[in-house]
Image 1: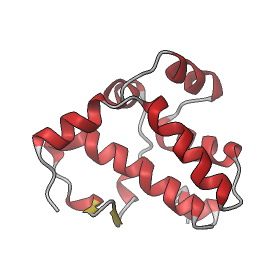
Image 2: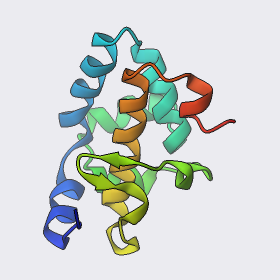
Image 3: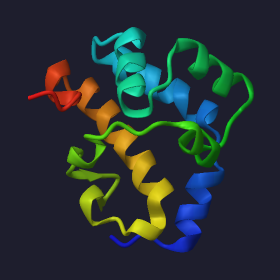
Image 4: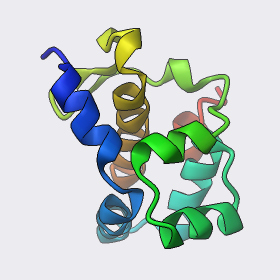
Length: 123
């Protein structure tokens, strides 16, 4: 599937807090913890617990969320299909969309029971 400018804008204007509870539910249903979810988010974005709570409180959009993030240098190693989109084929002009899909993919891998060192692209 191809990302469109409309789809990119739609994702960019969604708030992180509107999706966050779904991430928590997804990982907890599969036996993982909220702390592990926060570890994955911290790896991708550089956000600590305080930063994350502040972004939730201010109802930051995904655009703001990723503008404030310091994306991990190995984020480009996140590959595969998520929500019908092959991450590595998302064009540079749709950077926010790709970054949100990075996060979705990491949450998905966590929920599927993948080892943390694999999720965090350590080996």
